[in-house]
Every structure is written in structure tokens, then in C-alpha cells.
Image 1 (cartoon, rainbow, N blue to C red):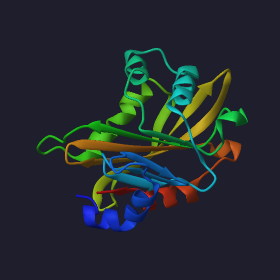
Image 2 (image 1 turned 90 degrees about the horizontal axis):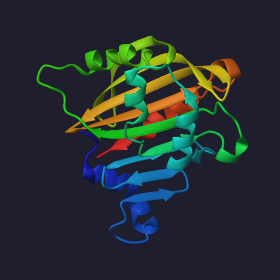
Image 3 (image 1 turned 180 degrees about the horizontal axis):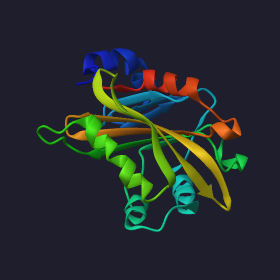
Image 4 (image 1 turned 135 degrees about the vertical axis):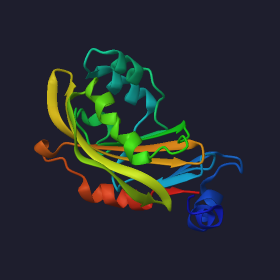
Length: 209
């Protein structure tokens, strides 16, 4: 499913035409707008937020303290996200910055498999790597860009560079055709760094062909 190529081009065609330096350019970033033509994906980052480099993300991932388990090693060596967005710039020195990561991977639901039930198994997986990981809102069915999706909220203790903070993790998982799109949103309510409004705006602006 998805919004369809005609509607996608109607929404983003002007930006693609004016911002692309060549007609075959796959990824276009224009101010707050990110368009990936290969994946048929577009979104608008929250106003004033910053795109983070994959090199910086790798450094952060390496510094995060995780539980010692086989699951941790799998998560550490997994695919990098296609995009990382942070509320604060890399130069701010802030350890616990609200952020958004987006992953795309090849995946197909098996016959009779339910997306919400599949996502529910993540609690057991992540609890082997993240401190005090737990669902606070179980996976529920929603629509994102006219695609069936599962949305859930969890919390865990984020430990990094000798510091720790309670992290709230909102996630949306979409399976479309033979690909899985995962949007992870992290904030820190006990530090006063909550992004409820930004999350709703981002979810509404996230589009798939």
C-alpha cells in the first residue's frame, strides 16, 4: 500500500525538480525535507533539528553501555539507519538528546503472521540488551501513509559515558511489499526533554509511495 506515486510526486515533485543537482539523484535534502527516491520515502524533520552523520551515530552507538549478551552483539553489528535526526547539534556536547532514527530492511510477513504479534516479541529481544527495558504501551495497529503499521511505546535506562537517564522509546513499524520501515523516536521525560508534539508532526509528515 502507500499513498501512490502520483500523490507522492504531487506532494514532493516541485522539491525534487528544483533541489536535485542531477535527474538521477537518489537522496534529496532541502531544508527540513528529506526525500529518498529509491525507497519512495519522504519526511520532514522537526523545525530546528539537525541531521546527524552516520559517523557520529556509530560513535554514539559504540559509547552506549549495553548488557553483555549475544543479542547485544547482534544489535551492535546490525545495519545502520538511513537517517538520524537529533534535536541538538553534534557540537552541543549534550549526552541525552531527543532523536529520531529510520531503518529500512528487506522483510516479508509470513502467511498468517500478524504485525502486532511480531512486534510484541521485541520486548524480549531488547530486554536482553537494554537495562530495564519494558513496554508501557503494547503494539497497536495504526495507519501511516495509508500503510498498515504497528506503534508501541517502551522505556529503558540509557547509559552512556558514565551517565544514565530514563529513555522513552516510541516506535512505528511498517511492512510494505518486501520491506520493513522502522521509525524510532527517543526522548527523556525526567530531564524535561520531551517531544510529543514533534512526534505527532513527524508521523503525519512521513510518506511512502
